[in-house]
Image (cartoon, rainbow, N blue to C red; front, side, top):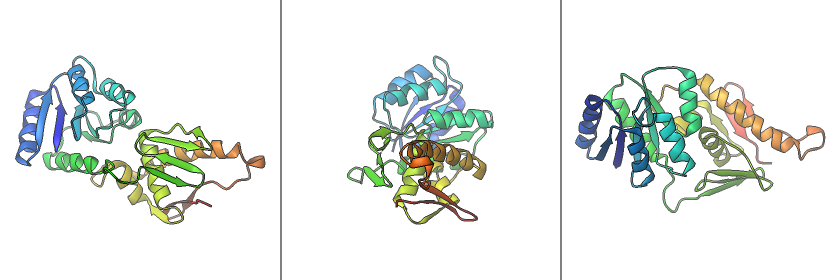
Length: 232
């Protein structure tokens, strides 16, 4: 893979670069947030490692800037603080995963590979339709009755996973893996927060079309097992 490392700590950047090169990857390093954003927008990277504390532009600003300009490169964020608000903010801005410093190099390498694998393959199905909802994976747009559904990046991935398995139970572990990767520290209560927000957005739209809000919710909780998207 061609990987961009945006990290101002030159010792950490050097260690990561060496490890990635040893794994056979191509690596470019930037020590400045503004420069890193420009490189990401060049669109030639298959994954990026992005620190939060950077000169020129911090990691959150970098992420917000590139996502607003439709850069879909998978991004793994590094943070020195294991604080839920910072982690949730990173996901809401479009991060694909996060890792808290200090980290184990093998875990970092595995997570970079995991987020890169979750990118849609060329030629794969780009649209999913079920229950009146259409997901355009190429543009990351969700619609219901020709109305856009304002989903965060993680909510989009969760909904896509549920819709692909419409009528079947999707376990909590499967949802966490689909949205955050198989090597992750994301806890189940974090999943609950995202699922609550997703269901609220869908139910608000659907209730407007149903008399007295009588229509059944599209996402059901299967206690002790997970969730199910009900297409009919």
